Length: 246
Image (cartoon, rainbow, N blue to C red; front, top):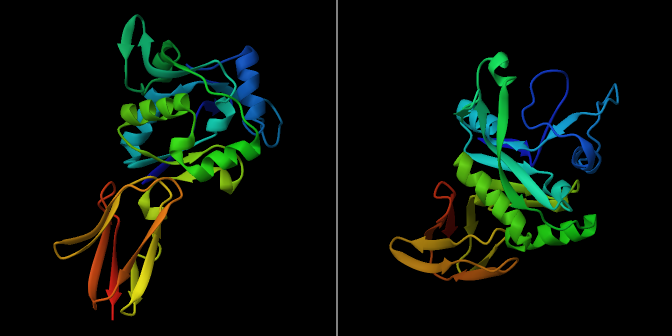
């Protein structure tokens, strides 16, 4: 189950918004975020820092196992980036999202501060996306890693722009297609790496190839003997596939 979240928070309408920002930082998020304005009214949306208290509830309630984190490029150019880790309500820490809007209205955010990362052009972000997660600025990867650790789910899709080409897909489920393949003896099958994750091709107990590939590399294996071969991603054990050699 994949949940989708922006790298910051936005909302419309009245009501409590603990991480809400105003001033130049709010304008940066609103304008760079693809135009955070109401579709019909054109009223500016309210924007703020990422709220992990709210996201933790979303993960728990929806049974999320993966996260798609979008608009990371929007935070580019900010000196500091904050993440709300918990609330403080009447002086007491509150890590879970309250059911009462009355209580929420009295909550103040507690932030973890991160160094920002440089701004980049749309083309530059696309070039980064093509190289994979390791090509992201170190500070952006630190930010993502902290979110994953707090939510206890991996961010398997990262978006750094509006274009599809600006999307980094990390889960092996999105990389192997089809999961079952029939080839003739002597055929060569090529795996193309997109996410820097190790994967293995095995037959019974024999390991043919194992290890992580560098970004955008690939490897091939020639199947000379008939039989059924299985591959699996050692990071995502549910992602398995079969190659039948006739």
